Length: 381
Image 1: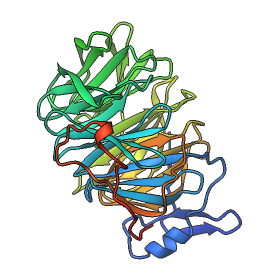
Image 2: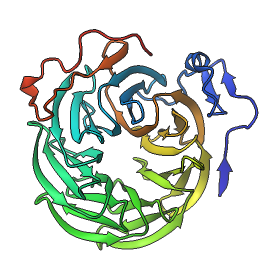
Image 3: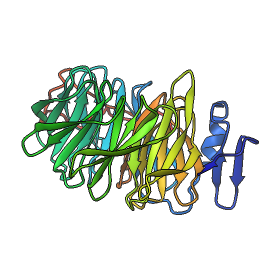
């Protein structure tokens, strides 16, 4: 194993021919204008939008994946812990951990499709592979809400383990696996019946899960053990664990199934600053990459070339080149960036900031919402 780290010297190394900026000293926020001017694209960037949930300032940030530039900031959701693009990239979901609802908006125009109440303190929202159903983990209720995406109505509530946090569907949509962070288990749900079929003991404080592309294995970050667990979905048995960095949170498997990426957040008093890169064939850590203060959320673009890592204590997003295994750009976003997701569609809303016009009654159908956000845009990024 080798450690890949940014230089500890200058704050920025600029490659002027390609406009590339690799920014170090990620706790220095004084020179925002200089940073914004040097966040040009890198080799192999793909078109699309990277969505960030900024839990600390009640906003979502939309980043142009082709240029690594912030194009829009969406305000109006109180305490968004997580954000999730639908499989077709056309819609974006988020949850309000403070107010207990899920909201869905158009990924392009930012029109609000609808809002639906969830259980108490929703943490994550995911969408089924066919886009028909959304699921939220309700951390204070120990439940998962099932939501019909077309009607924006909750259709079922499923009891799971203690403190459900991260969750993801299997690639075929057959199973939903929930990480119970106040417990030692993963809850496995049959999506055909919305029934809990088993709890799998994996270790202390599992925070998030990630499926292999073929659905054979699911991996879980063990925040309390500083490790990652590997589970065989056919037998529903723990295969093994591997040690990673301090306080691992989110996990993600690249689409080519080469790497399992694990964000090591640590704590606010002692932030983790790394992503552990695990070889999926050997289930061993082969690289440790310095990414930023409090590495938390991870998503990988559809080409498996770049990963995007939210740094919850650094208020920025690191762009990690998975061929070079180094950070190639750093993008300032909002306060306490948490969840992250990738939409294959570009954001075509006007520049600047948008404020969602959320209804007072959270259970409002799409037909009752006119354009979903306030007329006009504030000056912004």
